Picture 1 (cartoon, rainbow, N blue to C red):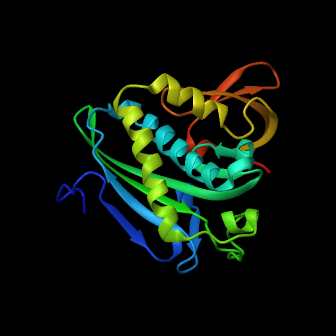
Picture 2: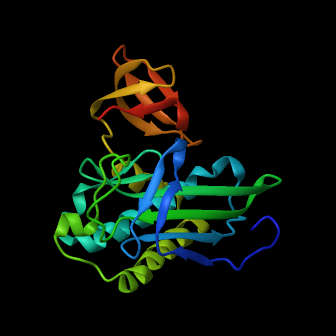
Length: 229
């Protein structure tokens, strides 16, 4: 749609439920009707170069972190970003992000920010791995209509930081919230080879930089590696 027209920046398209929703690397998103937040937001980050597009991913991830932390209150330290675009509470997924960018020349022309956040859903489809929700964690339901504005307050805050060039701050916070950062973990690469490594950082293109057992660093793109949990 955005390739044929240019919706106003900040336009939000919301769905009351989602079945077999599309996720990163062939994954799915399943949302029970009226229980969660599933929406797409239109942005025009024309200030952002195409090769810096992961900066938008970091900003949006932090906005979702802000949102989840707001509703979990005292349990802030347990909310993490599982690279590249899942939000975890402890070892369970509470939210997912899918960003589609349209590029014009060297810059991003428009972005569609797909966001799914588990709010009040308790039961999930078997094919959805390790899901959780705000209600599952707190034992209390959240009013969706009240929660929605908070999401866009945090999205606006982080988007303004990005537009003002506050990338060092965004990157620092992103790394601070990165799931299993600096911890020896098990991974599998795109050839099916399992190995142990330790996340060191994210490079400027959004690749995951991992220290291997032999002391060498190796970078992995989105589809080249996955956690073994």
